Image 1 (cartoon, rainbow, N blue to C red):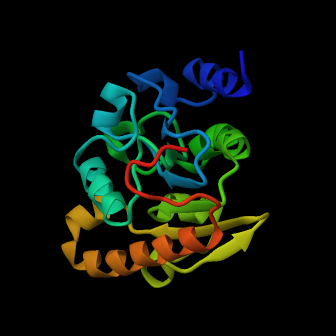
Image 2: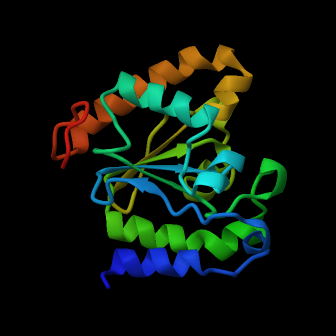
Image 3: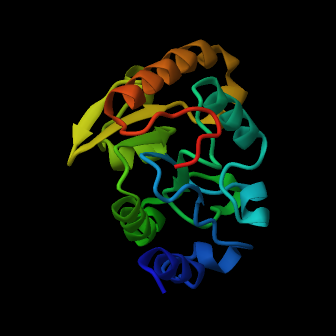
Length: 195
C-alpha cells in the first residue's frame, strides 16, 4: 500500500477525538493528490458527512463556481481537504482539541501532496495554518511564504452565501490567486487540464 492509501486508511479508522462517534463518513479530501494548489476548509458539513466528499453542498457549488472563474477544477488541478475529517455537530466550528487530534492527518496530506500554494477557506484554517491571530476580514487575499509554500486565505464560501457583500472582495482575491499560480506553479492551469 502506498503512503497516500495508508494515510487514507488511517483516517477512515481514526478515533482520536469525539467527532468519530457521530460521523457518518470520514471526509478525507478530493481532487488531484499531485496538485500544486491545496485548498483547506474547516470541516465537513451535513451533506459532506453524508456523501464523504468535501464541499458538496450549497457552499461547495459556490466554491466550484469560484474555481471555474480562474480555471481551477477539483477534478484535475487542485486538491481540497479540511482541518478536521469528521463533521462537528450542528456544523459548529471544530474545537481546538478536535483540530489538535486531526492536524497530523492534514500535515501528512500536505507533505505527500507537496503543494506550492495553500488556500485557507475561512478563518478556522487560516488561524491554524497561517497565524494564530489571523484576521480574515482584514487580511484575506494577502500572501505569506513559509517553508517553500505560499499561503493565503479567502472567505469561506458559506460566509459568502450568508453575506453576498463579501463577494466583490473575494473576486479580487481569486484574481490574485490566479496571478500567484501563474507566477509560482510549474504547469499551466487551464480548465480541465489534468496533470
